[in-house]
Image (cartoon, rainbow, N blue to C red):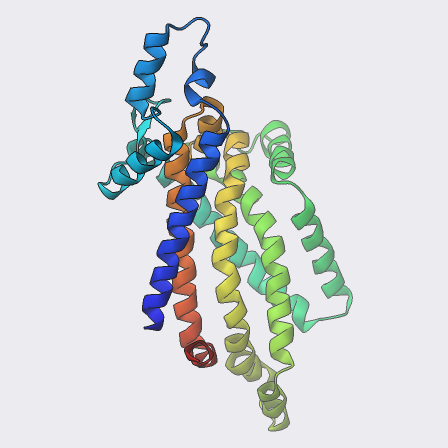
Length: 307
C-alpha cells in the first residue's frame, strides 16, 4: 500500500511537470513567428508549419493533442532537425551519460576520502584547509573553472584538446570541471554525515568496550553515515545534468546539455519538452528508489511512514 502511494505520487509529479513545462514554453510567445520572420514569410506557409509542428488551436487544444501523442509514444517533431524529437534526444544522450557517469565517479573518489579525513580531523588545520577549498570549489562557476582548465591544459601546456569529442583526452577537462565542482559540495556532506555518526551512542559504547578506532569506523560510523549520503548523491548527480548545459557548450561536447542551449536558441519546443520529461522521469524514479533504499537501510523511516 505504501509503495502504491509512492508510485501514485510519482505519476502525479511527472504529470504536473509535463503540464507546467508545456504551458510555460508556450507562454513565451508563438514559436513559429520566433523561427520565421512573419513579414517576409507568406501567411499560408506559417500556417502550414503550425499544422506540421502541432501549434494550431488554443493552448488547451495543443495540450490535449500533446498528451494523447505521449500516451501513444509520440514525443513531437523537432523543428530544428526536421525529424522526431525522440531520435534527436537519443542521439545526444550517450555523450551526456558518459560525461555524467565519469563526473559522478570523480565526485565520489574525491568527496568520500577527503570528507572523511576532514571529519576525523575536525577543527584542526587539515579540516580548515579542506573546508576552505570546498567553499572555493562550490562558489566557483563551472564556466570559469572550465575556461581556466582550457587556458592551462590546452593553451599553455598543450596536453589536452580544448573542445570536441572522440578520444579519452576530450573527456578529461569536462569531467574535471563538473566533478570537481560537485565534489566540493559532496565533501561537505560526507564530513557532516561522518561527524553526526561519530556522536552516536553506539560509537561511544564501542569505544568504551575497547574496540579499535578502525573497527569502530567501519562497523558503526560508515553504516550510519551512509544514510544521508544515499539521499544526497542522486540529487548531486541530477545537478550534474543541469551543469552540463554550460560545460558542454564550453567544451563543444555533443550531449543533452548543449542540445538544451541549441533548442532554446531555435525555439524547438518538442525537443525541450522531451528533454525535461526525460530528466523528470529519471529524477522521480531515482528519488523513488532512494526512498525504498532508505527504508531498507533505516527501518524507522518505513515504520514512521506507516502511521
